[in-house]
Image 1: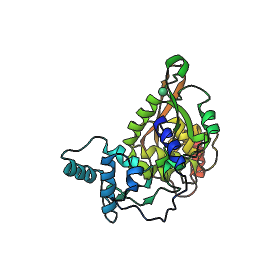
Image 2 (image 1 turned 90 degrees about the vertical axis):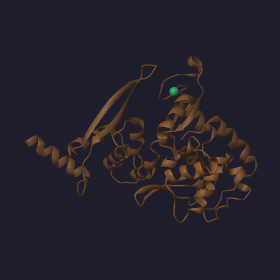
Image 3 (image 1 turned 60 degrees about the vertical axis):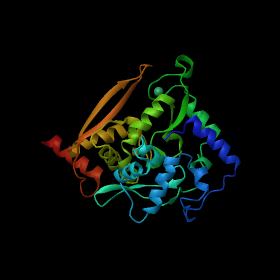
Length: 293
Ligand SMILES: [Zn+2]
C-alpha cells in the first residue's frame, strides 16, 4: 500500500546507512538481537515478532496473537492487525489457511531486504504518478482543498501488487489512511488475492479477486489492474460482465467524487464454480445457446 511521507523520510534516512539487499537465506534475527530495534521500532510490534519467531513451526492465528499480547501487557492493545502488517516492511509474514484458520507465518526476510531499502519507486515515477495533482479517490486537490498527495499502490504490496506504473495512483493522505483501515479487514484474503493475480485467464483473475472480497465492493481500478496482471486487458469491464453468463451475480455501484467524476465499484453476490476447460470458450458457447433459445 502507499507509503506515507513519514515512511519516505525513514526511507531516506535508512538508505544513508547502506542499502545492501538482505539475501532471503539469511537467518532471521533472534528476538533479543539489537538489530530488531532498528528494523521494528514499536515495542509491541517487537513482542509480536518474538511470538511469531517462537511459533515458527506452529504459526498462530490473529486471535492467538491478541491473546498473547493481552497476557504480556495486561490488556490487548489496539491495532494488532496493523502491527503484524508493519512487520512485513522487513520480513515475509504471509497469512496462510492452516488447520481451520488463517495463521501468520514468520517465514524469513522480506525478499530484497527491508522495504525502506527498496521502495523502488524513482523520483521520476513518483512525480509522474502525482502529476494529475488530484486524489484518484475523492478528487480533492492540494491547491483547492489543501490535501497532501501520496503514491498509493492500488493492489497493496503485501497482496502482491507491483511498483509498476499501472498499479500506482495519487491518493490524499486521508483516503490513503481510510483505504489502509478498510483493507486491513481483508488481510486474511491476502493469500487468495496474491493467488488471483497468477491465473492465466483474465476472467478467472477478476472472478477470484471478487470472491476474495466475499461480496464486498471492489474498486474498478483494482479489478482493472488484476485483469491486466498477465497481459493488458483493454476491456476488463466486459470480461467482468461476462462472468454473468457463467451464472455469477455481479452488481455495480457508481460513486461520484467532489470533482464530479464517477467511480465504479463491483461486487459478486453469487458465484459459480469455474467451468472445466477454456473459460472464454465456455462463455461463447453459452452466449450462442442463449441466442438460439
Ligand atoms: Zn482523497
